[in-house]
Length: 456
Image 1 (cartoon, one colour):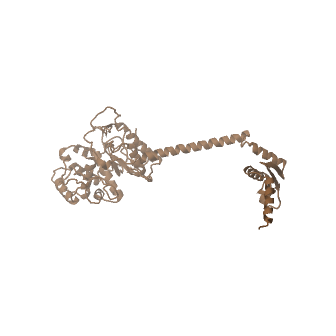
Image 2: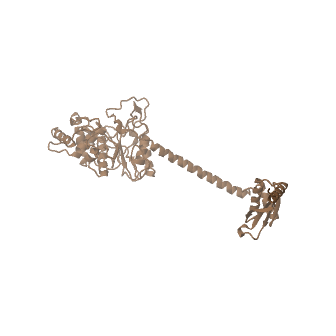
Image 3: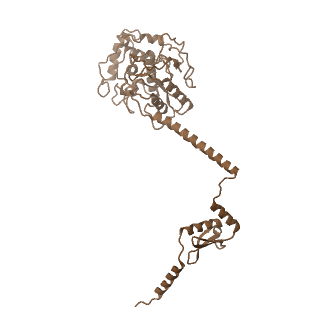
């Protein structure tokens, strides 16, 4: 089963090591290559290496030239970029496979190019301008350079910067490490956050070009080093969702033992070397990942290296957006289904003659309008009421409603139809109490007496 061909990777290679595997792999684990190029400068409480970077480079150059290693002639200089990258390799992935160190180095080189910086500028970026641990914020260090490099780290840094790694990662320009459950309790969250925001902690607004895992790379433990790349499509696109699903499957069964992922890929020592490097997708067969084991208890190996707080997990924005999208789709389908049901029911009611079945009041009003097209009179709640046409009214108010509340008829409602005026008169009559005619006459006589009363 092949993975990773979505039109942006290039042709997938057979399962094999890169062409330079036979050149670098034999050096891994050799004491004279894994020995440290000591700087004599320790990390301080602020997370910085409190020594001048140029002085550290010059001291490392002398040690490399005096090492006698065939990969570093005594006359070869050590550039600032190579030294910075060597520290970065050692600090991020330590004593790992040659492919893992090369992959890490390529992501740093590509990240620097993306930002328009040199490698040393990227690694040293901080308020202090020193080597040290990862620092947050726009002025902090993007990657760690807190440890003195090994001789092999310097050799690999020079190898990558000279272009000999042949784009092993296919343009990978970001990296992370997800082997520790303590810092990454939910790897799917982090995968989604990178896809939406190119940031493990997530963001409020998804970016148009997401960062996705590039796939399995031969010789690379993808739990220890997850290589990512910014692709020309978003989290929500078809290609984006396909890449997310590929990553979710690859990281589905970490098999944590004592908080460390143990279901690592197994790369056979006798796996063949590729005849050429494609510089594209080197992702390989998912069968290289061993099956989940509930009782392994195996030692995670010498590659286990606590990444510290630099790789702490971020917010659950990825899961939030994922489930928000699902909820929105469910609501949309529900509204669509209800609309179809309502429309079908309405059409069926019309066909069966039951559409808007008239009420008793509507039937009586309709019958009265047909029998008395010009006028109407009645007694409602003790009131005498009349509805009649009136040519003197506005054409839009050609009917008037009169009501006798005990003092004589008076107009209380007008309208352009008899039915409308009758409805208004009915409402008024039902809301008011008729006036007692005798009481009205008594009050009229009393007012007349008061008006003619002679004052002393």
